[in-house]
Image (cartoon, helix red, strand yellow):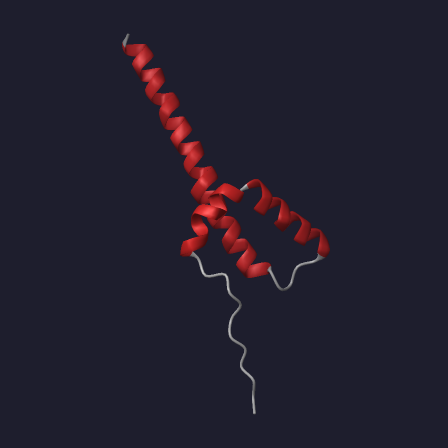
Length: 78
């Protein structure tokens, strides 16, 4: 009985870890990557970016209200 409880707890912790990584960690890293590279990417890298957004879309929806992805303000010299 004790071994069954240990294995059940292990499986629950594994699911929680994988779910947290899928919904929070990897989308956060994807946002950071997109923010750094958005305006200087090649066409192949842009396809890779779109693939990441497609794969981790649920997590990106969860993080989107908390992140600012607007471009920086331009300074125009007069």
